[in-house]
Amino acid sequence: MNKILIFAGAQESKLLIQKISENYLNLGEFHIIYEDNEIKNSIKEKENLFFYKIDFFAYEAYKDILRKDFTKVIILIKNKREAEFVLKKVKHYKYPILFTKFWIEFEKSEIKNLEIIDVPEITTNKIIDFLPNVPLYARDIGLGIGEILEVEVPPHSPFTYKSPSIFKKYGISVAAIYRNEELKQVENTKLILPNDKLILIGPPQKLKEIFTQIKSNIGAFPQPYGQNIYLLLDMKNMHKKEIYKLLKTALFLHRRLKNKKLIIKIINPSLNSQIYKLFKFPNIDISTDFYSTEYIKTLKEDNEKLNIGLIITNNDYFYEYKSAFFNLRKPILKVGEESIKKCQNLSVILNDKYILRIAPVIFDLSYQLDVKVTFYNIDPENSYNELIEHLKTLAKNFNFSKVEFINSKENPVFLLQKKQHTCLIEAFTKIPPLKIKQILFPKIEDSFILLDKFNQFLIPIKDENESNN
Image (cartoon, rainbow, N blue to C red; front, side, top):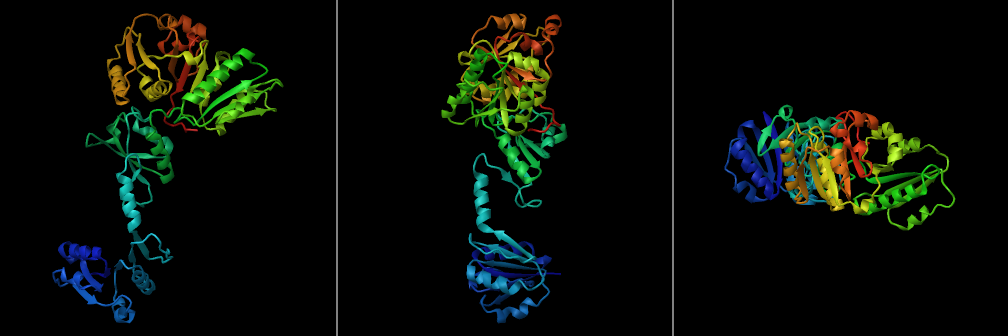
């Protein structure tokens, strides 16, 4: 039979003994050492409850009791000096000790058989859990070190409309999905929907990182791809006019987007460059590589170490190094003929495969640039009704009113060529084919290749097995 010893020196101990008396009597003997008569007087006498009224400092008076073969000792004493004294006396015994800590300041003990209930920590955690947009960890399940997390997916999250298996690449498992107050089987859930609650299991640090990404607010781009905007200038091989167009675009986006830094890297530098005057602007890092002369080599190396979220380039360099740009797996802004400052509309050609997966970025850019989004349905064989309803729901969740849907049977290239003050957004899903191939064998998803006059945001679609650099 289990024998439990309780040092009852707090009002909470009275509640504990009441619950034991009412529910757990048959599980063993309970020996209670107390000072305040109120603790014993509130409890009905039971045959397996043994009470000893002894001062906690009177060790000699309860020394013989400690020699019993106890399964556990519980120290529930509010007075710090008394609690420390009792702990000091019982720590030499072999049985497990459960110690309740009511104080913030307390010297941690190295007793191997000691388990501590930290009341200030538990209280604070419960208040924290009540606050919005903070991680909700399972503290009393598993190891209790933050390896189990509950998180609600907001409508604007980059994880909406993605497969639950996307978390595998982060080393995280989805244990359960709650939708509309119902438990859904993960294996039967194809997509994560807005306001789903996920139970995630994984390393605590990875869970903290994924929580931040899931809760990424609208207006966070270039997150989750990275924090910084990056511009690589080849002073020898770029025309002066092209350099200043790239610089003006980069500075405009640096002011409008929620990036941490604008990083400008210069290779093959010229002596008369005026770029360094930009040092006076906040959060702009300018550096010159006097040794590297290769554009794509520098770009690849910087991509590995600079936490890049958006790369700015022009049409010539994009098509010359299109395979390398694709393999970087980062958003690309391909600068067109018109200044991006004149952009009043983001144009998106509907595609059933990928648009939902980049929809959070589309609405994010619309929000940060303060421009309208126009979705073009120009596929005569597909009404895209379901896709359009999804997008309308997202727009409503994002509280967007600047959204338009246009149906047309006209060739998308001819249709958009007539437009002005427009930027394009397209999913970057493969290495772009040659322009002649698009002319001879046109595909809707490759229409952007023939629309180089526009500024174009190309957003990568990452495979589920890819790491997120």
